[in-house]
Image (cartoon, rainbow, N blue to C red; front, side):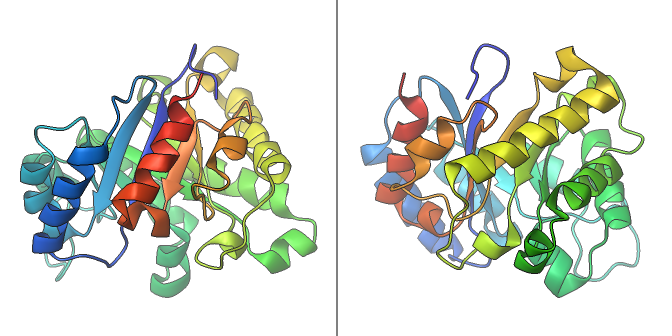
Length: 257
């Protein structure tokens, strides 16, 4: 982490978990044990149907509510989709874009990810842009090539002043939901490469201001080591974000001097 230049953000990605009632219960439990987050911003990205409940439940806490996905059109005949404007109107500030599960299970491409990034930014939202490689791609030695392509594609057409609203989350696909985690050195190497890619596109001053998260099975046991890497500025947390005590442990790791 480098707090001098950029935010540290610990974000929970609840995926398709918890009802509105369970969201309220989670918030009540978290409120009792949540530390004063001196150094990091705290975010929970919840299912769309839970957003109103989450906004109410976290309103008296230093916890920002985000969404897990959006569609790139403002309105129209897109049954089941949610627009950036709809999210903004609910009080959402962040939205996850291009998560590996969206890419793998729902056919999202680098092109649609780019459209979603622009939709989010145009609505005043902060996109958390996910990039990452599969195990096969890592073993083939094309990790950096793929990451470069994903970052450049996602940011195509994004103006420098809007880039400051973006967060990049490196999530190796082989370490999501598998219990496997990239070593701190592996994760740090890719996050450093992501910053170098942004520096090539936008220059050093802007590149050092961009928050880059690690999103591959961060948990209380490995959070401190991962966050000690100079270019890892937080985490996009899956399973551990569903349990208030584990989520707080990761927040504590981010709050250490």
